[in-house]
Image (tube, rainbow, N blue to C red; front, side, top):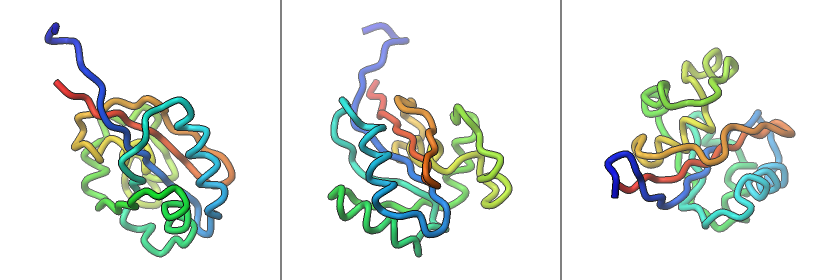
Length: 132
């Protein structure tokens, strides 16, 4: 294998949402983002979203663990985020929630396979672990 070549691995789904976003919208957008992809290891988001019932319900319906990440972990992904979010920066001081959370799931050893997409108050991004 070339040094520049990487083997793909597991997937992580990063999720951001407006307060009160319904589980149905999250599940629907996760379905769009992951069509044709391998199963994900979980949903990842910012710790500030712990009280979001829609996220918890969506994770339950998708049978995936829901992982809350600290702001500093998401901030550490700033140079890897493809589409920075001015709203996430203003509200949480992080460059992104969905993309940064998906990348942070693998400590940055990942690439985005589905960059940020937002619909119905929900933002989703999917990252794939890079195995070297």
